[in-house]
Image (cartoon, rainbow, N blue to C red; front, side, top):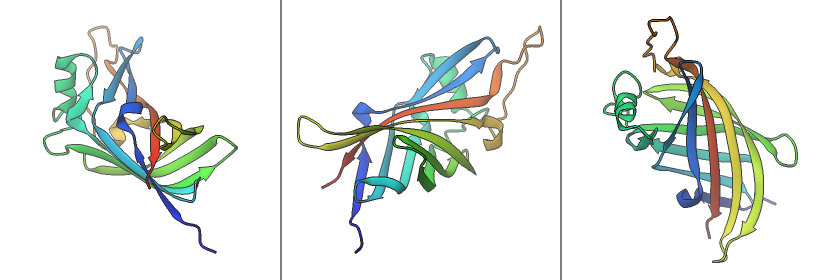
Length: 179
């Protein structure tokens, strides 16, 4: 007997998409995307084998400093004018334990698509005050920004690297089951 496909969409008011980059190798700058959307399709309520799609608006980048945000949107980094969105499409969603999953998928940034593996911690499922069925995941992973053509680099007078190549991803997602 075939299971029914279940559609889920991101609840943006209860979700956040953050990234962290070492600055001068001594501190970390945190940024986020304020505008994003995503969905998942599952067999019934099980996320094993789920199909996930996600996109974020590059122009919604926010690092709490306007000048830095403008630089990140420029051709030195994301080139938002020519590549206004980043996207992720899963190729596998595998359960490792009761609350641990691995999501592998194609991440497209600045027109470059690479396969990335992300860890996802299942936070549980709950009905909200309005009777909506919700599920939560905390997703993390690392990418090398230069793999995606974000090559801008600078060195301080003392020889220190201004921005690290490694970018840590930290995403908290709440999904709403669609009727």
